[in-house]
Image (cartoon, rainbow, N blue to C red; front, side, top):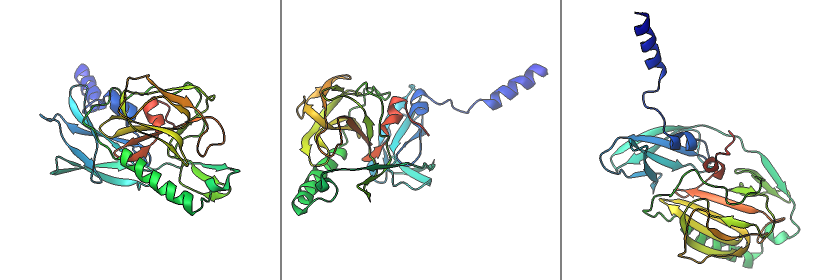
Length: 274
């Protein structure tokens, strides 16, 4: 009888369905984070969308399908929904997170309040980069535990409220690494180069599509070492660290986008801090 009681207690203490590695790694459902949603053991690959955009779906541990959803910084805490196969809605909860402030002084006033000509250029470049973020390819990501693109320490974290010369601008949409000029930048996962450019704010920039709406953007490079259409292996060098565009010194700025939402790259390298 004592053994039976112990067995029942143990069974009640266990989760109904143990979380897989990817869920434990990535599930940080906050604004600017990632929600991992269990879709169950479906017979065929499901299609999931969030706010009308397709999301990354994988077969975790060979047991069940999961949706991996990027949550924009503008997401309101509370209940959110994804749509499954165009017929079902699944709800999930989003928590809250406070992001700190960052104040930066720039000598070049055009990088704070651009003139009309520069604003026209910025608008054109923004549209080009937005189209890259919105791409959704059928390929599965080669890995979801990413490597750091450079070996330098993390500097400015994701989500900072940024003030340039005292004026508030868009939050910090990526993760910065302190690294010397010329440091090689490596792809954190395999992918295809879908856009390169030399932009007003971002400087020399490379976009890499890892698959199913998971896209990296690397900017402020001193050199670009790839061309559009190149296939990069995990660890493949795409360029070198620099300080081009709006930058106060050499560093790598890495954006990570999922279903066209800029999310915290720290989640994917095991460096996220709640």
